[in-house]
Amino acid sequence: MGEILSFEDILPRVAELKARGKRVAFANGHFDVLHVGHLRYLRAAKAEGDVLVVAINDDESVARLKGEGRPIAPEQERAELVAGLEPVDLVVIFSGDSPGPLMDRLQPDVHCKGPDYGTPDKVPEYDVVRSYGGDTRLVGDPKDHSTTDLIRKIRRLPD
Image (cartoon, rainbow, N blue to C red):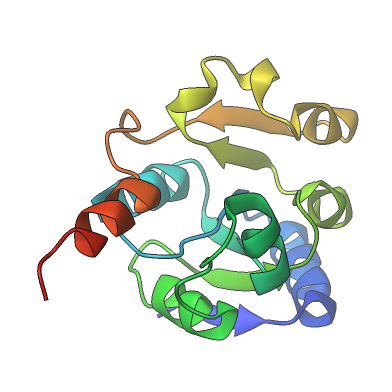
């Protein structure tokens, strides 16, 4: 099971892992309602490194980015669920709309995003990763699964 760490605690942990020669892969997202697409994305991200760090948007940023009624699950519960997935080693909750500032501090070897970006240079944090010599990879299956679609489907169920 993965470990949930604070921003302050994850920085030295990742530095120590990198000092021991571990390749650190980084994935991020809202993970509001887990579905198979999330698991496939995280498995593919883990294949890119020895250690997988997953950054989860805090409740404020999910509400701002996804709109009214979101998140469905609070950040601590989302972090606990993600930490319980087999590919995940470390979890951190971040504030703000982008993990770019966190990534700039952690400097993971590879930033993993879903294939819906088309090419790595279309990933918003591409320049941050490139600035410290990291790599951006598109991983996981096509975006055939969506939390928003799943929520809509659930809301249409009769009482």
